[in-house]
View 1 (cartoon, rainbow, N blue to C red):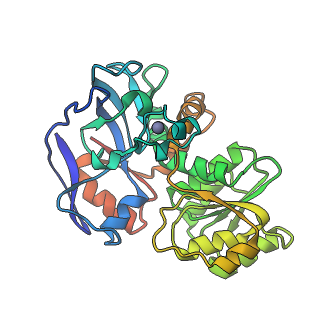
View 2: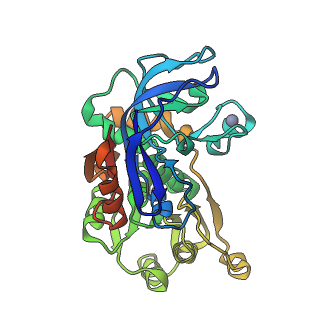
Length: 340
Ligand SMILES: [Zn+2]
């Protein structure tokens, strides 16, 4: 099969890779209908993470089940499925509590590399959710978004306790931040402040339900959020970047007693204890347990209640993956969908 590998920072290529095979009896093999490039794929692309040559890339996917192991009971050949970037058994105590991304048996799907024609999905019954029937092609981008960026933005909103009567601020205007805006509104937030300095991204944030835009960042951004909230700060702040600056911007934009939901993959963040102590904010986050939310997100998408697929502003054939990485790195594209 063809699949994307990264050789070194800035160097991805579509190569022939061996077809995945069932390894455990709980595995499934899916034919990937659509996959995409994640903001987190840009960390190794930019040299912030180490790269072993060649590294299979990709952890977001929707597709059709081609083969199942003998112990797979609920997922069937021919099902159209959506799964998370962590495989999970969905039965251990951690999964049952709703934290499937930290499942006692969690496996990273990224090791399989779903920017490819086929993918092996471990613990298929626990990891995958089948859609009701075969979705129309117009729904595929939205279902693909549910696999990571929507599920992650959704968790950010849940962790920040975005809900009715709340003012929510979102730090980060990448795909996750934009979909966190959608999630916060869908969960009933009264006001959603999107922090972005890019016109195209501001427009999408407004489409997704943002009520206010703040263009400043750092302490100036914090001051604007305070101005918009009678000096208190937001009730809920979703951090969707993962840097020191964005994390501090999130904490400082939150009112005492408020909640920060942090879902940007943390890179070099160090929290000052004394400031944290006196901030009085709740911090909750981490790798999103997307699997918890998939049934609800699939239902909302299939019912037409939400259209998160709008976050994909560039679609390329898999063979042009390198151009997709460049477009996202240079911020010419918010999120790139790849068609195998
Ligand atoms: Zn588990």
